[in-house]
Image (cartoon, rainbow, N blue to C red; front, side, top):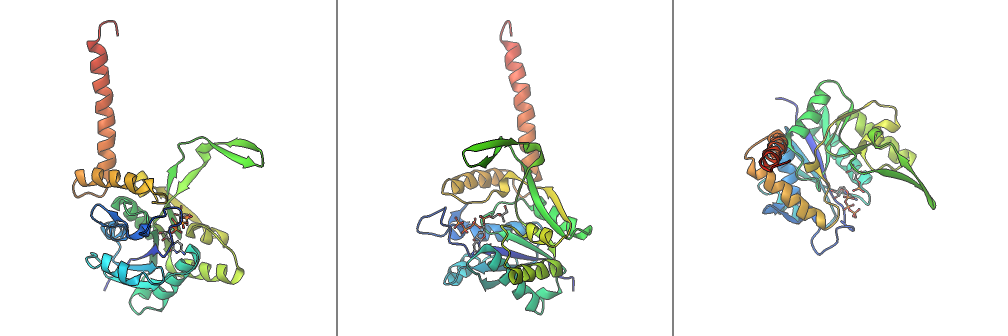
Length: 266
Ligand SMILES: Nc1ccn([C@@H]2O[C@H](COP(=O)(O)OP(=O)(O)OP(=O)(O)O)[C@@H](O)[C@H]2O)c(=O)n1
Ligand SMILES: C[C@](O)(CO)[C@H](O)COP(=O)(O)O
């Protein structure tokens, strides 16, 4: 039997920046719970098992939301930080008779539900090609300044990337690094940094704006727009949505040129 490709789906947060009565990971998006959309996206990109790390007391809610998941789902109770939740997910995989056969593991924020399948597949392919630690990355489109008290300095944004998930790893490596971080009392905000901390090489692949993180209330409305755009393109890896956007831009450019030609003196 082929080894499983395991996705650890981080869904144990409290969503303090999102607020509201319903935790953002089970808020409705395109008629489903956010976490259910995330698991579907991971499955579409090649993951064959999911380990969903849930907030204590929320397992039944999340289990119900994932009743129709396209791949087998396991549940683990998370911790007080994303890092602790990830470590618990990794330890669950490491002790599981089937999941522990996986050499690769992806770690994904449940609140990045619309990550295109091609991004997930690119992370997996980078691992197949020998990478140890992989993350999707996006160019920065705003001017960025580094703040120091009352002063600030502009930073060359061409050297910056916004890092997304799913992040992919050699499973033994990331498990060992998380154990070391827990022993060393070190804190990081993502898992790529965890591997980098212990001198493992990291690899970046192209991300997608559709892989945005639902953090504040407005983000669920933005995610709905991405969801409608993807649905409009039919079944796809997500590349077609990007291609369509390019063609629309090109056509739009041609359209504007036609209009200009039609206006005398333009
Ligand atoms: N103890 C935690 C904290 C966060 N997460 C998960 O990590 C992902 C990214 O974290 P974030 O967007 O910060 O979610 P929250 O921590 O819930 O949000 P906030 O910081 O606004 O409270 C989310 O899917 C969240 O559910 C987790 O599994 N366990
Ligand atoms: C893991 C992550 O999504 C990569 O960009 C990000 O670090 C999560 O940060 P959060 O504050 O836990 O949402």
